[in-house]
Image 1 (cartoon, rainbow, N blue to C red):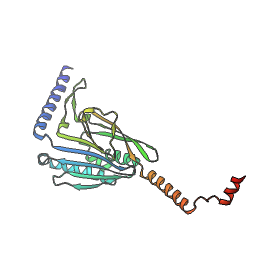
Image 2: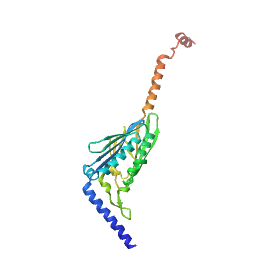
Image 3: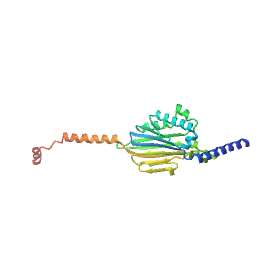
Image 4: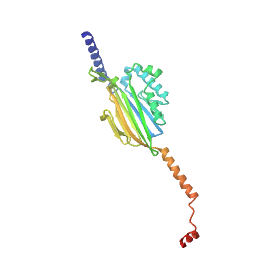
Length: 258
């Protein structure tokens, strides 16, 4: 029993030493940015940007290319377009029609299947889920967005569950949310990682923990606004076309004399 425990801690010590060396040599190797942009309740896009340092490419070119190819395949499977960046990174854009379409495409993109899943099997598993609740108030639409991403696989924890080391320090992980009007943050965990400016929200993801974000925002419902405008114009046109009949002077005087 003592021998097994000793081997276990020696193995963890070697892993810790290896990760420490990698952090020193490869710090800031990958910048990973995820974004969701709402232009209106019926139009928006998912964006993703991967920037990979030249140092990492030189050390593991084959692995980097395998990863990028798998991400490209996954993006195209949900109707996205992919642009190769000069630094061998990727710029991905995935349009969506409404909240339901966003949910489906976002969750499918971050849950690889088939060949993409096989290509990424050697990488630490990361699970994420995005959900939306929408309420239509004719002229306005209220949307509640909840996003959970589990990055505990990017950390080395002690037997008590405390984070000892995070190889995720090699990654710069960021989530962006852009809305027509400013979003209200309900329960970010941890709250200190969220920054807001006007309608843009930037959330720094922390490796080694489960990150959660819960926000509410409002958008003008242009379909409802257009419907109201059409009804008003039709009513005004009807009034001009068929004005209210004027009262007859004879009838008015007759009523007065009586």
